[in-house]
Amino acid sequence: NAGVTQTPKFQVLKTGQSMTLQCAQDMNHEYMSWYRQDPGMGLRLIHYSVGAGITDQGEVPNGYNVSRSTTEDFPLRLLSAAPSQTSVYFCASRAGYTGELFFGEGSRLTVL
Amino acid sequence: AQSVTQLDSHVSVSEGTPVLLRCNYSSSYSPSLFWYVQHPNKGLQLLLKYTSAATLVKGINGFEAEFKKSETSFHLTKPSAHMSDAAEYFCVVKPFNTGNQFYFGTGTSLTVIP
Image (cartoon, rainbow over all chains, first blue to last red; front, side):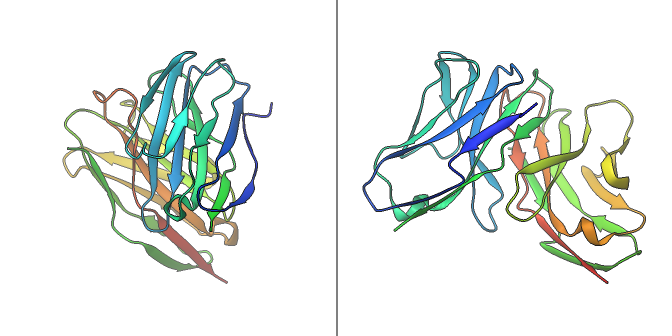
């Protein structure tokens, strides 16, 4: 059972480039989310989805776009990368309303 | 407003001695509370969770935490530290009435001295 899988694990971009971080889960979880982790700030919610076709903004959504066409996949798109988006990105899914989050191993992004 | 405060950003203990990582929260309603551990360059792994059952919660690897509503605390403890416990620990709160929002503390880095 793979759980939550993120790709790529590492990526370097130049300012203004676009890219997509992939996230897939095989646990049939309706809820999926993206967080960014920055030193001394914990994890902050970027976007989340409660099911296919339904997405919503989190705490820090600017500069990011998401879509949810299937239960399994929840890609995160950076439209025009900026150095402020240098961070480690985590995808997480959840089973049920009171369940805990299951995390992927993270994607480390550097924007030059 | 919801918030999570991890009272220590760094904790150092000697191997074999007790571990205490402190977490206070503010929440308008009965929350779900979690502790996660993150080893270097890894994702977050659930240690334990409180969801309004027993106030003393036992988790993996010998960790446990006690929910104290009167003190709005959820401190993480372990009787005897092991070298493999060295990691970053996050206290996480999900208030009952906030839908899908989880609130993360800023983390406590645990160092275990041999």
